Length: 443
Ligand code: ADP
Image 1 (tube, helix red, strand yellow):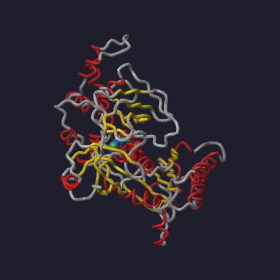
Image 2 (tube, protein in one colour; image 1 turned 180 degrees about the vertical axis):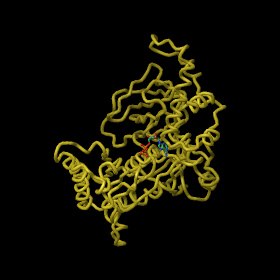
Image 3 (cartoon, helix red, strand yellow; image 1 turned 30 degrees about the horizontal axis):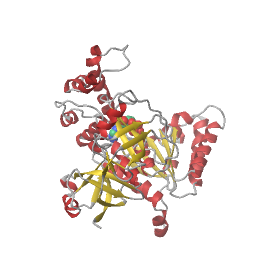
Image 4 (tube, protein in one colour; image 1 turned 60 degrees about the horizontal axis):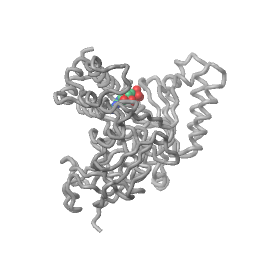
């Protein structure tokens, strides 16, 4: 059978949530595929995607670029190999979508129609996560601008199905239980401009988690603690969450300042419990935000609590036996204020600097945060990237949200707040213009 094995790479920033796979011309030729064709992607599970041509820099690299949803659908991680073959897609008569466990979604009256328009001509396999955008264009769900992962609980017929105008799409509000895939969570496509930093974190964290035997064989200890340092809002927390999500590790989060409790012994107790839970549910990532606030240099410490918390943290880190299966990632804005005892070998002995993004990074971050937004033709992300010198990711996120709010204010006079439904024609017309970004930028 005509098939190839390729290495999985992350999707381009604009591709996320579109159900596409990028292949290079060689692979297309070999599999007799044209852009727009449907392929089967087989990892630990099998899913399908629509083929697009890869950008030139990816040619001859033996990779396929797919987003976090498709990776979850195929149950593979970045760097793992999948088998690709042309799919026999049949037209779907029916598709039933439901939110994953614990998600609560409310659908408006025309939601099924809007969802169908979004996923038209896309392939779906039963049990797939089908990301659906809820943007200002599709105000039938909460959290605008984000992809809502719905799950294909039923397709008719089975196998690789193609959504067409004739497909009957049914939406269920009742969350579906017992599905392992959640589709939620941060993936590497949600991080802009930190290519080499992501690569380093993956080597330090993913590698020992997924292949502990490599470290055993070479007689080296996998890292126990990784310290991410850099200015606030640059994506440290985002990166830690993405690694946990992409490795399917349990994620435990400790907010530095919050764990300092005034009651005697409570902070230590809380730390101990988190480490115990993390060990029990390993592989796990424990994320400690603002490490400097719980573990400042001891000479700086006046508080008794801080001193005890540092001692407890040292004990817990030294006591971690599940080498490589529980990794502590800490973040700080002030690396020099972290207790040196915590930076010794076996503790936070790896450091990665997460800096302010450059122009290319800013463009990627802009692409990520405007993904679900209906942008007017006059909006140039290149220009905006050039004009936002000094902005960190968090600044760019607020800029895009503010621009959307400005656009909304333009349409407010046309919206009757007493009416339950907003006319679909108005929703279809809503766009965010260059002037909205300009206005947001000048504030
Ligand atoms: P930090 O932990 O470094 O203080 P966060 O990861 O909490 O920063 O970032 C806050 C928010 O800013 C994120 O939720 C995200 O929306 C946005 N953001 C920050 N950095 C990036 C980035 N590199 N790419 C995309 N979004 C980013």
